[in-house]
Image (cartoon, rainbow, N blue to C red):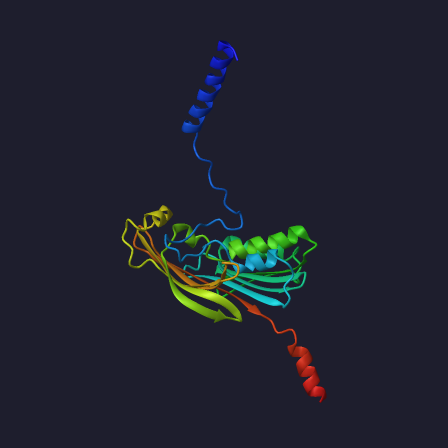
Length: 267
């Protein structure tokens, strides 16, 4: 190797070393299904963005039919309280999604106009005692990829408290517990003992104060939240308060009940 080749090789080595020293580490790629990271810094934590309703719907057809229940209840009636009730059986998903909120004049006009077009088997709208209610019923099969994915998004993102866990409230492991036939680990969620500094992430919501409290049961096998009972109390800059309550669970349906009862009656 002559002098020119040696100098050229040294130049390439130096350039590569400089690039390695000045380059920034690549961001960690997060699973799109689980947008929220661990909720504390200890070994005992769970992913506040991963819910078993999503894992079960996206996974293989369950051996036993499941009922999925998820509710969001708002103390401020101008906001929508949501109720998702779904049955997952084989390759079929049946969802009944109900919203309730304080009706406005625009809602009354819209409801009156839509009565001409909507199918009451799919959408039912009514206003009673000033409260608007809209119920949407969907029956989808796994072969309908768009409808199936829509069911996942509507429940997992529209009916669970994943957004609350963006602020990483502290959690405490309580112990193991059997929930609806599932082996779970129980956690308590509580921000009431945190200082203003420790709550700083949550103040991005432009609040004077807030407290997130409740309980979550995490499925051991999949590390997803199987059941939860979470309350988010918010205090506005003007001192006004509102509460958002989240409740959800997954239960196994006993598909053999009807057969058993039939046999019992026949005997």
